[in-house]
Length: 281
Image 1 (cartoon, rainbow, N blue to C red):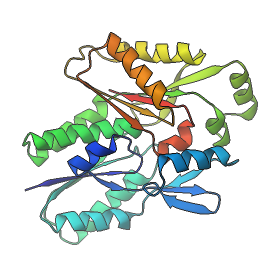
Image 2 (image 1 turned 30 degrees about the horizontal axis):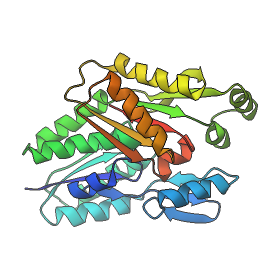
Image 3 (image 1 turned 180 degrees about the vertical axis):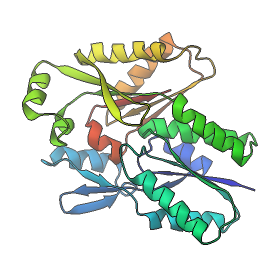
Image 4 (image 1 turned 90 degrees about the vertical axis):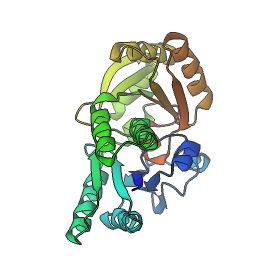
């Protein structure tokens, strides 16, 4: 029996890999004042151009339970088992809607296998979980084993964030305007991480981009040991050259088996702001 992996529009990972793997994506909605788009409808270029020209931070909203349910039915009608990996419940109602859709499916006396997992992550942290689940499917693992691996990766995979600008954090009300202006004047950069509970918290404040990115590289070594079989994911918000330079810097120090670079989509890009970097391992 085939296994279908479903995620949502908050995930960042190379599109060509997701397409090849047949990963199904339920988009979130992105709101610019009175305009509304599905996260899948906006190109990266259009999104960052719109965000740059907007005085108000774009807002995002979760898919409805029916959007998930319709996709579940489409896949289960084919006889497929379904594994859903969703954006952290600490950041969005997306997971709750996906879980509610599962309950609705089970009420219709569905007798197959479906599992909905709170990734407690986002961006390429979620993408890495999806990729590892896909690799497990390709190796012929059972549905139960793939689910067990995905659950273990919720705890195992770590995610770090670098913010080049505090503009979106201020616009979103997560940082006082006066404090934000002072931090910007002092060239303070935020290094953040995904907590065990699935929220995003500040780890350190570092003065200057170069020092902050070097500190991010050092943190990778503090998070884990032994890199020969491991995968690293880097997502960037409209700063590809910075991401490539960071990859080279990381690989000089840590011999990861694979490193994937992807653009940061509208959902996470809304909060990271232009120039942001997310690293997951």
